[in-house]
Length: 295
Image (tube, rainbow, N blue to C red; front, side, top):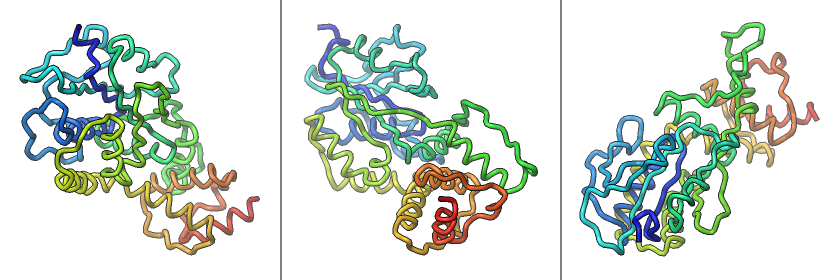
């Protein structure tokens, strides 16, 4: 059997931000049945990525996909799982010409695919991590800042609100039987549980649960600057729905404020009048009152 036709291949498909490399490290180092390679000391760099980890096979890039060859640099048994990274680059699945699953099924017909899924709540995290880690901004529509004072806080905040309305990054679940979907918002919320569920779906065993928990805690620590917006947004929406007065004056990032305004408009079907609300809200009760006035 050709190696491309092996049922022992696992392909991790991921968007930018470091999530695919994190999962790759876990599957290779914490799952018993995979090919083993030397651990990487000081794994995470200053941006929280694990890109400099040691690998036994080159990652797959769409531009070289047709010519890709599997060259494994370490000895391995025929029964061991081969883990490959598929870098989807900055492509958005809204692009109809992008069909990674068709590519993988044709190249690796018997492989299992682990797909990183981006839901709406994780969209800003993908954007923010990509911007800081790769320098790329998912700006497909080039929404213009047309307000009276484009350099003032309210104008920059509204730019981000419109940006998220116009740029929904899509990396959706795949329902193929040979695809295992990992929802990145769940990975960021509870990585250990998510990894345990992944191992069960792959029918693989975790070698050291305590070490895995420690590793995931360290990962969450270095990712916290990116993930804090996810928990803040969920807490704010929950407080609005339950008429809880939460102080949100500590949210000072205009990007974060703009994204939260987008979530308010999306979830409550309102449009926040820009000039009436030039100042950022002090509490969720202010937002609740505004929504009732706009209904």
